[in-house]
Amino acid sequence: MIDVIIIGGGVVGCGVARELSRYNLNIALLEKTDDISNGQSKANTAIIHGGYDAKPGTLKAKFNVLGNKMYDRICAELDVPHKRNTSLVVSFGSDGHEALEKLKQQGIENGVPGLSIIGQDELRRREPNIGSTAYEALLVETGGIVCPYEMTQAYAENAAMNGVNFYREAEVTAIEKTQDGWKVISKAGTFTAKAVVNCAGLYSDVINNMVSEDKISIVPRRGEYYIVDKKYANEFHASIFQLPTKMGKGILVSPTVDGTVLLGPTAEDIDDKMDTRTTTEGLAKVLKYASLTWEHIPMRSFITTYSGLRAHCNRDDFVLGEVPDAPMFFNAVGVESPGLTSAPAIAEYLAGMIADKLSAKKNENFDPIRKGIPKFREMNDEQRARAISINPDYAKIVCRCETVTEAEIREAIRRPVGARSVDGIKRRTRAGMGRCQAGFCTPRTVEILCEELHISPLEVTKFGGNSKYIESYLFEKGDNENA
Image (cartoon, rainbow, N blue to C red; front, side):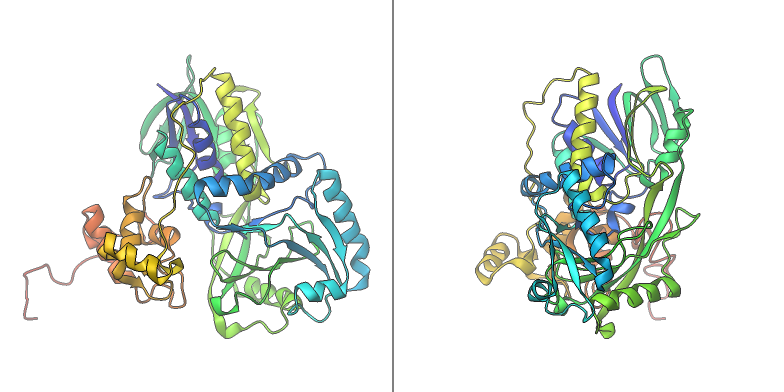
């Protein structure tokens, strides 16, 4: 019997897996898709929120502030890029002062340090390129940015290093109570466990409702984004928000840790948990409001657009902990923004609770350190020469836009919980994330996947399932060779 089954391979699920691996437990994580970080954790604003906007007394407020404080340590241990670039909540007119003051006081009540309201002179000193109508702003000194999918991958790799078993394409179809715990029926097989942790994101209501009479509803909230080319990386320093609404934190303009600039998101409640389309209306809304912050948005320098879905819960708060009518079944439900910021604290909280319930002993061999794949684009000439001397595949550039080498792609596949698809490689190396959006590097990436996984090109997918690049060959090898 497994001690703990975790359902869901996003940042919270992988974080829980890593924190539970600090104990002598048999742990398995089940992910419904072909890869971890395939839901909310791959498509969000990548912000480390300060914690000023969550309603005091809520779990969102509590875990946002706790999680924010953990980021420097966690990112150092897991070798994840992050930056404390600060956040600004900007008022575009004198009538916003009262709302900014309310946010400031709310943040103070939540325990957020480093909050102050700055006027036009200081605002323009900090951000010379901000829009002409920007009047004043709430400065959040603890705000930051991080790569959400790299954070998730790092959690997963470190968990696997410490003994956690990962099962992908393992959608859970039923859960049954047994005398000793739970029977979890999935597309990867049937498992029995003493405890189950529900970290299923958009589908966490479905999983909860399999075992509890206390029904929960998750509404997908779609947010649409633009990404701007790296040549504008220095246009803004802080992550710049506009005064929030009841639907979210508004349209932001923010640098990313990878050097691009992010515009968005919108906030639209929809019915379909798979509908990640971008829309004419949504993207127009992003431009309309982002232009208040950035008046001359370089629209010819957009790299791509995308959308992500947030798991908005009808409880308007995180739902965390053991389910009262389902002993040893633990929820992490409704973990929308500030879920990424809160994830380290949520993971630590749930892991500690579960370990205590199971009377688990500490894993004396637990290793908290994970090293990321060395990035050729970040090396100096001496480091590059050394890397090539050790592994000649570092001399072979596959992705020109992002300067990603064959060595990095092969390691992304070989690592614990490694890439199985082109998008899996993209999220681990940035191959295909640059200006040409994989127009140049895809054929070689497909070849490397075939070589490493010992599969046919007919089996290679963009993101698992039926997302195949090649359906069939016009001619089989050796047939009609002169055609």
